[in-house]
Structures are given as structure tokens and as C-alpha cells.
Image (cartoon, rainbow, N blue to C red; front, side, top):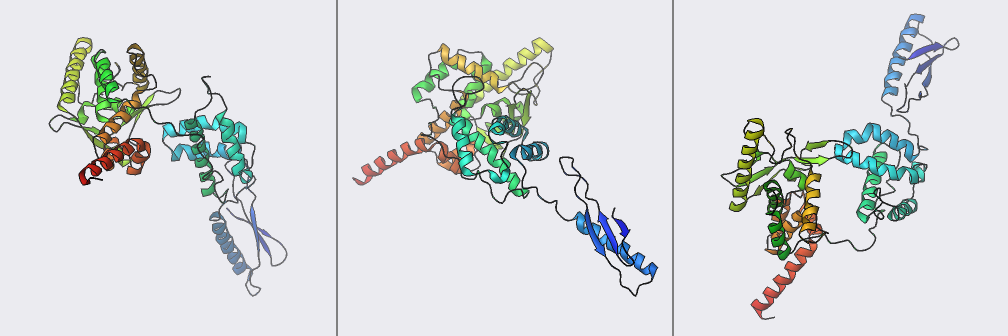
Length: 391
């Protein structure tokens, strides 16, 4: 509420309090001096001054808070972590960004936002390339450095939106060092060996790994499947959720990031038969342990408590399978998804169809990730054309 103080015979000081900033510091109040027309009577003057106070208070309340451009990155990140990140980002992304912030703060936290320059940020990235991983197994990967850039870029973009900066100094600041590593993909011979290895596991693991290889699902998407997602008649699976493991927290189930992630994938007759056999085993197990039947809302791969299995469980098991069968150790569960995509491309499937099956929001993403596979197809297409026209 505005306060009014009389100053002199025909002068009044209006003072409007502006409360506190996000750091808990009291904001400086705003003042204005007004003088009612001399011809007004005392009552008219009093009424006029009150009206001016109300108008001035409304004006001040709609005035944006002055921006403290001397704020440090550390102080701004404190505000971002409390008020912006949790509201703007998915919980998994927010937690990952908090991990990156632990590396950003010691190196850049003392810089004022306005003092951050491209040279400073590039030096930070170079320093991180030579920083040890938390588990002590060598230095940070280029992918981790790129992740630090994405986190920093996102935070500084928020600072621009709030008026602390006029531009994002991290924009186009990151340049990958060295050649981008080609994603590990199993060739046809290795795929056959993998399938044989999967068949030597329990039906749960055999079904899970074959399903990922056959459909290109992400490991968390496979863990998030429910029996109600399967249409047996059409031989389709509706992918509409995923399971994510957050650091030092329980696994959570979340919706796809984009509408493209909510999609249908298609099953072969053989895959359908395996899934039906797995359901029968689940029915038998539930009957023996709890005298219950499998419900349509049960997860395909569930824990005894009914929650979906942790994707990390399958990651660990996959590594054991590779070691036990002398298979390439650079492969991982996600490699099965890449293998699925590469096999589709080698069969001549167009990029938009591949992108749709994988749940990519844009076909350009598929092209970027699997450029090498499409390059092989280009060679085959050119050779085919040459034979057809004799050139």
C-alpha cells in the first residue's frame, strides 16, 4: 500500500514499497512528489492525492524489477535451480543438469554473467576434456563435455529471457574435438550370435533383448511396456511411456518427450509367439507365488512389487552375456536399437519410415545418427543405377 507524506504547504510525497527480491533482500521503495491544483479545497486536494497514490502504486506494481547485471553465474544458478529448472525441465533432465552444475560452478561460478566470454567458456570445455570421470575410469568423454555445454547454454538462455544478459555467450561456442565416434552396431553375423546367446538366457531376458532388437525400442521404453499396450490381432505395440533411473533415486515412469515418441511399432509372427510364451510363464509364476493372474495393466517386465524393472538391470545382464559369449564388448543394450535401424536402412527403408519407427521427432535426427548406414545405401543405389544404364 502506498504511503502519503505531506511536504510543505502544497506538496505531498508518495512512497510505494516494492517488497523483496528472490534472494530475500528488501527492494528499494519508489517515491514520487505530487502537487494538487491550488484552486482545490483541502478536501478536494486530499481526495486528489489519494487518487494519485493509487495510480502510482498500480504503475509501480507493473514495472519490472530492475535487473542486477553484476550478478555472478553462481548466484544466478542458485536462482535457476530453485525457480526455473524444476518448472521448465523434466525431472530426469533437471537432475542431470544439477550433476553438470557441480562441474560448472568451480570453474565459472565466480564470473559475473556479463563477464562470460566465448574464450572463457571454450577454455572451460578444454579443461573438462582433461578432467577425470567420477568413477576414475579415465577422463570425461566428448559426449559428457557436450552435455556440459548444453546445460550451460540452457541456463544462460534463461538469463537472457529474464533480462540479465542481452545475448547467450555460450551460443555456438562448443566445437566437438576429434572425429565423432561411430555408434557401435552389430553386423549380421554378430546379430546371429547375439540371438543364440539370448536363447541361452531365461525367457525374461531372451524376450526383452529380442524385443529391443526386433523393434528398435529404447531400453526404458521396453521396461515401460504393459500388456495392454499389445494388440495381438494387429501385431502392434503402442509405445507410450518409458522408465528412467535417476541418480540416487528410484526409477520413475514418464511420458515420451515428444509426440513422435508416442508411436506404434510392429511385431513379426515369431516375436508375437515369444511374447505369448512369456505371458504364459508370467501367468504360471504369478499363480505359484501370489495365486493371481496377469492383469492387462501389469508391466511386461515387472518387479515382485509390481513396479517396472530398472533398465540398468538389463544393461548389467547384457554385459555379462557379451563376456560369456566372446562378443564385442563395445556393444550395449542401446546398440540393439542402432542395429535395428541400420538393418532397416540396409533393406532400403526410407528415412522417414525409420524415423517414425524409432520415435525421432525429425527425420534429420535419423540422418545425422545413421549417416554412415545411408552412405552405404547410396553406394549400392549408384552401382545399381550404373548396371541399369551401362555407365
